[in-house]
Image (cartoon, rainbow, N blue to C red):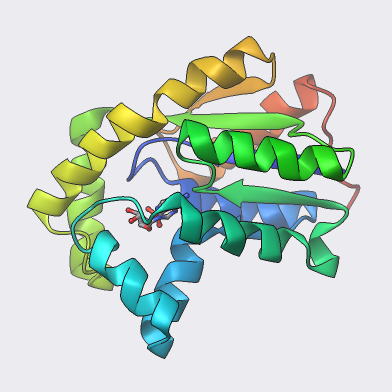
Length: 196
Ligand code: AMP
């Protein structure tokens, strides 16, 4: 059973790695960004609200995001473990998640920090903008997202390091190499992928 979080700046490759790790470790990947984007596509009220923040590179308010994650983690497929991608992103979200997991008698087993050079991540995001056409991948919004990350999310790294659950992995290199690095680092922590 593993309860994991992948954290890192926009463009570090969290989404790509989360999808691969989800398959390797047999836990569902829970991405708040993906849930918001699905809602935008479906034109829901939540989607319209989220879009007004996402398009500016700002965080969607905790009051909205927290409930969404609690609902998702309450689903049957997440009772045996999960890989969170993009949540928690603020100190307040960490507290909410801690309280929610504590009620279940659980806590995060490991936090995977994906590191990446700032200019490299900007270039990656600009490439992705061309390929996927994400409305928050324009240069101005990318710079704002990096700034918001530095202000609100980067401080979480020290917090998790203090808890002894942080593993730092270099996000540069091929997609396969980065996945192998993460799986290796998790194994060192005693979190092993199920036998294939
Ligand atoms: P991501 O796909 O993780 O880069 O998220 C895309 C956007 O969704 C972010 O820039 C935020 O606007 C919003 N978002 C995703 N997760 C969160 C969160 N935990 N808290 C607030 N906003 C979020």
